[in-house]
Length: 447
Image (cartoon, rainbow, N blue to C red):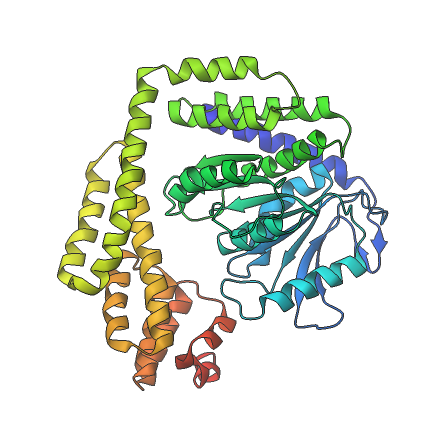
């Protein structure tokens, strides 16, 4: 109840601030209106487009910061919806690509067209550029940030820092988000933090109850607080004390809203990182130290570490088992996790079970996709059977089953599974061109 009350208060404050902004008069610059989401087609190639938000305070003077954002499935609206509530409050320009998606073949062209078109139509603060992305979009956002010093910070949703052969931007400030049930949690919480320290990145990490998905909407404010903190520490903005006070107030409200020792500890760590170099953090460090010495915290840490180690051991074994174990073994393994979820009341053990099921789903997705593209139908058929066991409501299961039957020349069964995929939410017809099985049938399937 306490958490809901605090989040409700935050929402009321946001609505009040939004209403205040709405009283400002919208302006038009280069045909683009402030205070609303614009769908913009690139001048040199109208097949390339993006969503753009210019805050009401945009005056075409090049003084406002900009966020370049990417969604793994080219769902620009979803990314914009997540970033938008606080873009106005903090006066950030937001640009979201409508062409980027995982494994897109013409990535360099998409990026160059996006950057060129926005730069021709919008004036922004060249010294305050940031990137953001979800899942595969987070990876491209991170890559851009790590390879070019013009980017000051990167927000990574449901993905963590990975190893790069070369990191050119050692000053990149990274903020990472992951759900406790996300198969990428160990990447964010483990190797991602280790690499951030190795590369010398300023970083913070936040965790939420959920899987491989966007964080709760209220958490998007943390992106702007972090980016403002980075700017304040570099002397790019004034009012450092006000920014620090805003961060302290926001983080303290999150800490007060949870009684879980592990989650409190994580929030203390993030608050210290955000405020370091801006204000004294001794009282926060003292509170964290006291929490660290509690028996409940020690037990939770031990449990989480043990499960992380177990995940590291199990993942390669499960990959091997795709090709060495029969479907009966897999049915038993998957049902075992589901049974434990029904019976086990331990929060962190339940997180582990859900992460493993989530990992099995993404593993089957990746392997079946590769096998179908390579035309290895016998192996693909087995993996798809396992995929359907572990994630029966995932539209990609039935999209791939459609591809399987089309590859065998059975259009009717292919169409049946394709329709089921659409009913479950598949809405990315451009993806069909990635698979040879769909190319000759695409128009007929979409009728």
